[in-house]
Image (cartoon, rainbow, N blue to C red):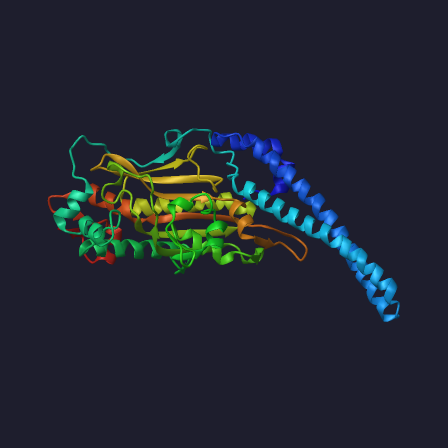
Amino acid sequence: MLQVDFIKENFSKVIDSLKKRNKDYSSDLKKIIDFNENRKKQQTKLDALLSEVNNLSKQIGKLFKNGEVEEANELKKSVEKIKPEVKLLQDLLNSNNEDLQELLCSIPNIPNELVKKGTSEEDNEIVFESTFKLSDEKLKEHWGICEEYNIIDFELGNKVTGSGFPVYKGKGAALQRALINYFLDKNTSSGYTEVQPPILVNENSAFATGQLPDKEGQMYHISNDNLYLIPTAEVPITNFYRDSIINSSDLPIKLTGYTPCFRREAGSYGKDVRGLNRLHQFDKVEIVRIEKPEDSYKVLDEMVEHVKNILEELELPFRILRLCGGDLGFTSALTYDFEVYSKGQKKWLEVSSVSNFETYQSNRLKLRLRINEKEKKLAHTLNGSALALPRIVAAIIENNNSPEGIKIPKILHKYTGFKFIS
């Protein structure tokens, strides 16, 4: 969430930057400033009235103590006359604060200067692409291969729960577990501390990282307890530090965690949801960073290199894209997407997003850094998938299928205990 003072001090810059998202927010931003000015005026009047009531109350107490009951009762009448005005101002202030909060929540993060204007994923910039050979050879899609080797059962998952909830079996389950362990080991060896967070979060947590109200329709909601199934481990892990003040000397904070993730994927249909392409439940390993503002973009580059190295070790063809304004997430200032090439489907599949949110999340989180005894400022938060499993598994199965079976990447041999699925 943007800060009101920042919007006021950088009004034209904020408007111009947000135009990269293909929408003019100038009217809403002007309302935010107006609401804030009204709020300040109402607060000043309220503070003056409360001060007057407080002074009168002290005088009344003294008068009663001195036995001047009649004079005290007269002052009490004055206090009673002020109370309705206090109540009115308090109600106006609460209403104004709610309106201001609602407007602030409707404004996305400001894109970084590296973000280009664009309308859709077609305008994203390719910043890296690994070397690999395209082939016209007709290869099998992963769902057919999974059925052949009986390693992932989509129909069984459909029977138990519904579409988008596959069942991993035998060596398919072992491959899944091997990838999770490899990702976690890779992250912890790079200095990330492993955590195992809850997979249910409350409304405050979902709001703090920006899932609410922006992505409410995509989250599974348990209405009886007002809890949400997490769409990513980013949500609970980042919320470890909600309502916190961290000493800048304690940075960097580097956390990694494996969780199942849940997304309704409302509106998804057609061939893009076949097999492992788009699931309602899937496994993912996440990396989360909390950093000083001056370090966050250097750290973002480090995170990109980290994920890049994982994909290189998995021997998968991949590319890195810098998202344009039209495809940039609501809370992100800059995002790099990683896509692996699916040789069976002959298409690119997204497997990771690595993002810098700058102060957008930390403002909602009320996550601040203590610079010294007097100075505090908002931290920068970053996160990335390292990695999401379904499309990685799909790419390994499709790209490595052979007459001998599915060849397992060498880096995974010590985790799987086998070199082929046959």
